[in-house]
Length: 344
Image (cartoon, rainbow, N blue to C red; front, top):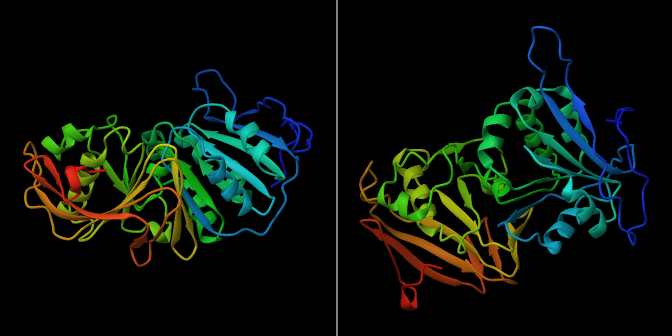
């Protein structure tokens, strides 16, 4: 898709020079007419070449845990974009990623597409922009906005077509939260481990499924900002709820620390980069007690912690260079087989 003539594009710059701070474009889908509400709008903010470039891509998924952005993870996505067009998706915000990605990578263009509501998500132009991107990154923020505004719209279809075409995809924080088959939707704000363990059916434990179809993340739920925000308890509750509700007899979880990322190749081999770790969890037994207003009892969750520089195979669910241990929850209290009882 060529960029509409009404959009201003900054001229391409050598990668050794800092790009212009931003180019702001607001496309309004409709006019304000007497007696009518303002039509839905989206923002498309692009820097680099005005015309798209079709480039060969390499499949892969970057699972970023949030916090400071990792240059190595973004470069990994760029490398798989074949010097084509890199697209950042948001539900709100600005184009602050554009200059960052352009400084890191040699690309035809870098653009941010802000899709703030379902009407915007249903516009054919929005789906076309997604279709033409070689690499897509879903930014952080509030995953409830993604679930409410993008699920079961042409945006969902375009993202899944992107995945099926073997193009690279990444997400951080809220953007990572929606990459698995199962997602913590945060429809009633985030939930902390203490609340979830005490009541697995707390109103803030809101789960959804089947938004994106990344084959290696089938039967999987993700979590972010993991150790820093003490989210192990809530992840165990998510797994218990998936089993209790009959969504999966044997779900899995991938949880990523801040300032860390899991870079997943098309064959399922994954590397952990950054200064944190990643956690791969899989229950071996259904929950013993998972009921409303009752502390969780859930035993024998196989856990593998992978530090920076080490690896995990998502196909065979085995790792190298990490630590293997088991977690259980007894009436809302987590017990670990690790020395000292650490859950992380």
